[in-house]
Structures are given as structure tokens and as C-alpha cells.
Image 1 (tube, protein in one colour):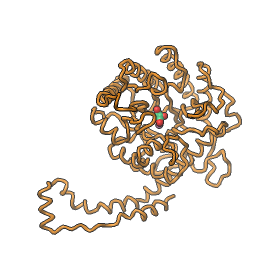
Image 2 (cartoon, rainbow, N blue to C red):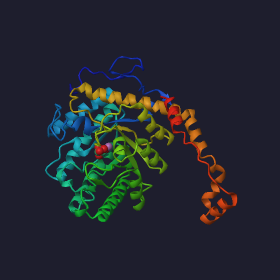
Image 3 (cartoon, helix red, strand yellow):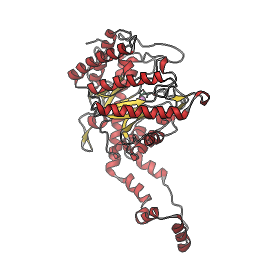
Image 4 (tube, helix red, strand yellow):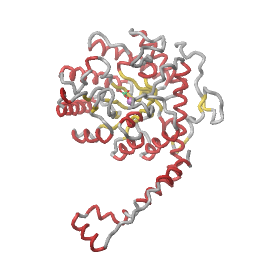
Length: 431
Ligand code: XUL
Ligand code: CO
């Protein structure tokens, strides 16, 4: 037990009228929506990196947070784990997620780093047993240390590729050991700053081979979770190879991995790519690649990946609508890849940032479920395409036949309203 969250009791659902800051207004984990509890729909997860490893620095200044677990010994790592599981229990979240680097300090050699990872993940295994909290996913941080500055699998130096292979193997082993539901690969520095020093074709090939090796190894050890790629268009590098869902789909097809790997889609990354979150989710669902989500929001003016906690129900509603329409999560979940603002120093800030975000997601999901169950939006969308029901043969035809038909029947299409504002009004009805 730490005393970091001392005096903060586990949060309970008290309903929309409560004025208790330390209670849920919309998230009742046992509430059943569309045949499933909110706990099972939302599958909330807290991230180790933002909530426990990040120190509050920005490009202009360093650490603002004071946490008793900041330090580079294994004792600090265990204290951090104790505090993390205390937060999970206060919030009642069923899952959490980590990078290897968030969990423990690196050692002087690869082997020492790996052994420390094994040691701390053994400890996490005990904490999981004690609390019932499970691992949503593990991943490797292959972007912070200077060895990764020119990429991991896409690095011009084959020794970095080797180091990346060893790192992912260790992280996959420990994710499996902890019963992780997924394993994530975000292409941290898999991209480039300038073409002048970059062989783009070769780097993409290396990334493809690397992913094939990861998939093969996961199968070999009997990892039964899902391998997920997390697209992001830029930041840290100017051009990232995993730009967005459509780009990653092309990449997976290229290497025959479209049946093996799914996607972890992040709200802020979608926005950086010039898309909306729901666009990326709908695109992934349409390609059969929807895996999990990193829930957060960006500042819409700054053009940065600001990783703020979500606080906009209408926005979140449209995202969950796509998820529910696709059948909901299987191994995936709602992972809060979100961090406090650096002035939010208190333990209470950490608790309430998550609690508010959980309420926003619950309210959004319930609104989405109302809209889906009512079916009016889907009816209107289907109506727009209704003529295709009798004209499906067009797609089996050829240009000459179709051209002849236009002339023969004097076809002259009449434009019809897209009714966007009416549909926007309809959506607001369910909020
Ligand atoms: C970076 C990001 C990562 C991944 C995991 O923008 O989202 O935290 O989620 O590496
Ligand atoms: Co993320």
C-alpha cells in the first residue's frame, strides 16, 4: 500500500443528478445496454506512461509532478506499480496498458533490461491476481532512447533492427505471461525527416519483414491476443509510414498480413491525419480491421498530439456508434492514452481526469446505442442507396454496355439532397 491516494475511496455510480465530484454520473458498470454491461462494452484501460511515468515536462520546462515513485531503482518501479493498481481499483477499471520503459529503468545491457522487465512483470502478475485487473496490451517503447532516433525496424543500421527484434520478443513474452488481450505496435520513429538521407523503399520493406516476424513469433508462443498497429501521420517524425488506417491497410496487404493484424485507432492521431475519429473507425470496420481504441482528444488549434482526456460527448458518441455498429469490442477496449495538463499536480486530478473521461465515454456510448437501436439513421442512410437494390447488376457489367444503356434509355440523373443538416438534427435527438 502507498499513501499516494490516501483518503480517496473507490468511486461509485450515483446518477446524473449527483453533485459528488468523486462519483460517476453516467458510468454504471453494471448497466446493461444492447445486451451487454457498460463494463464489458467500454473495457476501460489506464495507461502507465501518461499517468505514472510522465513527469509533466514540455519542450520549455521539465518535471512539474512530484511522485514518490520517480527514480531509477527497481524499488521505485514496484512503488509505481503499487500506486497504479491503487488507481485502477479506485476507478474500477478492468484493464491497463504499458510500454516496457514505463515499467522499469533500463539496465546497462539488453539482458539486464530484459531481466528487469521479467522481474517487474512478475510483480504485475501478482497485483493482477490480487485485484482482478487485467492487461489490455503491452508494447515496446522503441522511440525514446537515442538508439532509436532513426527508427527501430526501419533503421539504416541492422544492429538496431536486431535490438528491436529482441525488445519486441521480450515484450511479447511478458504480455503473454500476463494474459494480455492484445499486443500493440505504434511506429514511434518509423518514418523520416528528409528523403535526402532515406531509402524509403528499403525502410518499408524492413518494416514489413519485421511485422511478419512479430506475427510468426506470436503464433509460435501461442499468444492468443490480437496484434494491433496504431496509425499516426506525423510526430515524432515528419513523415510516418503508418499514416492512417487506409495506409496501414495497404501496408498489411503488401505483406500478406491483413488477416493477422488489426488496428488500434487513436482519436488524436485521426485528427492529425486530417480525419475524424469516426472516419478512421468506420474505415477500419469496413476493412475488418477494427481492434481497439486509444481514447483522448487533441487541441484543435495547436496541430499537436496533445493527448487530453476526452470531454465532448457528441464527439465520443459518433465514435462509439461506429464501434457498436461493428459489433463492439472483442479483445479491444477504451484505453485512455491521455495525460493531465502539467499544472494538474494533485492525486485527485489524476483520479478525476479519468473519472470524467469514463463518464463522457459512458454517456457517448449510451447515446450511440439509443441511435443504433432506434435505427432511424440507418434507415435514412439505406434509403439514400435504395436504388442500388434493383440496380446491383450495374457493377457486374462493363463500360460499353452501360454507355449503350444511357443512350437507349435517355438516362439523365436528377440530383437529390444529401440532407446533412437534417441528419445532424437527428443525431442530436439521441444526446
Ligand atoms: C503516441 C502514442 C503511443 C502509443 C503506444 O502518440 O499514442 O503512446 O499508444 O506506443
Ligand atoms: Co496511442
